[in-house]
Length: 240
Image (cartoon, rainbow, N blue to C red):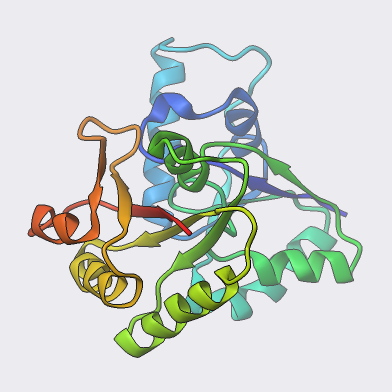
């Protein structure tokens, strides 16, 4: 029986890759990845660095794992294929395009199937945009709620925000709320938040660990004016 390794990868800066992640990615038989092009580029960059002695990891032999596409739309179809490989004794790494798999990325169904079949799996920790944004925000990190990506439609977004407000009734302690958003939906989401939550303070983090990393703080109405042509991936945070 093989092992499934759930591997965290950098969210922007390649230097954030861990030694254990490198050893795992170059020792498994297969890598299940959101986008084979992104993962292939990561492996090529790491291999080039090691060959150029940019960094040296003792005891590692550069094995060429096979890449398997594994994104949301095909997770249900691909899960049995990966389970079969694991049962046959093959080791498989699961990665997302960046950060920790399963956090608003595919992998939940695969892990559940491993549990059902008593297949060994483990986590190789790495960078997380969720936790990095929370720490960068300056908001209290002792308790928080992560909502993933907001729904596509305004009515569904309003429903989520309304439930947040209802759930906050009678809460004795404030809580930090965190969710992801894409650039093309950012302004609409900010406008919906203002409509439902009022003139709240918000923190917007983007391009973490990259050259143009930005942490913006202000009122929700100011954020709408600030991000007129948003670029990059965003994490939004506020307190309830």
